[in-house]
Image 1: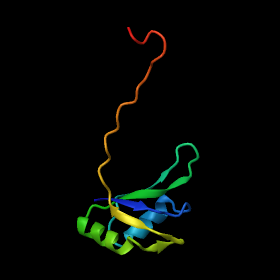
Image 2: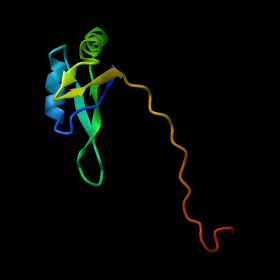
Image 3: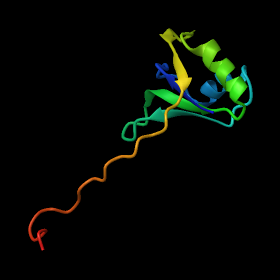
Image 4: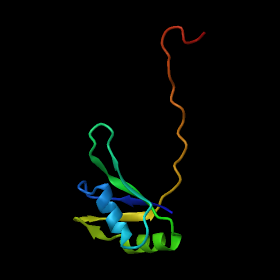
Length: 96
């Protein structure tokens, strides 16, 4: 199960996110999403747990839990929506 974790402290890294969820079961992957330009945490991340009952137990235990002065939002991640293609080109001569 893919789990969304929001309202993370900006000091949280991948290892500490993994350790937080490993107390509830096996973790395949844990990643804090970073800003592409600054490399700084964006305050949320995702955890992948292979066992859905362990994942649900982690969600139940950690949603609303306070870590490093921040109240976590933890739930099953939604599927990513398809993005509209971005236009390209344009300018002179693009009509032909």
